[in-house]
Length: 235
Image (cartoon, rainbow, N blue to C red; front, side, top):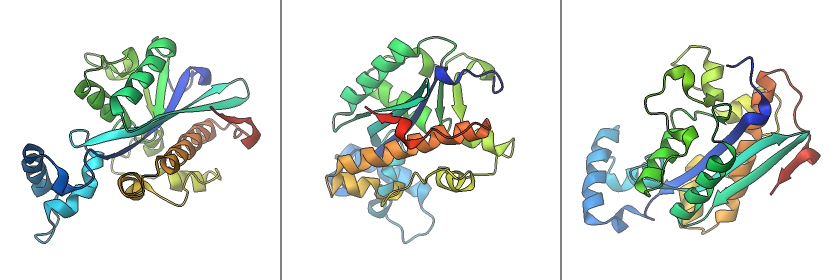
């Protein structure tokens, strides 16, 4: 599958997530109790508290939500970028599902993300089910054999079977001389920028830079030239 890919059939994606509530003390009592249980398993020392660990809640689909999905696809010599974002998670997921159901609903279509198999794909699927949205064909992998699952992962491809090895998109971008996807924030800042600074636009820009870098990295894996900046079109 790796050698015979039509690049035009790939939708590159990146997501940004945050805790579902601004702070631990704003959790409903039932979720506070359940987060306390989760936090017990996350603690690395006795001095860490559920309150302190809540900043990590956004990486768990049961306690977080998606605020931005940035997508990119190759069209002729252009890379076209479109983002789905907003405070209403169900609305952005419905819009993203409509894209998948309309243009990426065939077995020839593929998704690509960095660490997507461990994070992006399952997170989106879980949040869709929580929001009572039917899973699009390309995300519904139940009953499929590994080679039938239409998901690419630039981290997995870089591992070459070394499952202990993790390499960030930022590091790979540097190694492959791709313009850095990182801006004045990183993943650990997203919750604060969203909940405290109320700056969703900054997060969208960050997410778009990541999905552009992801696409460029995939091209580099195939020994292809990078997409020129003037050919990157943000919709």
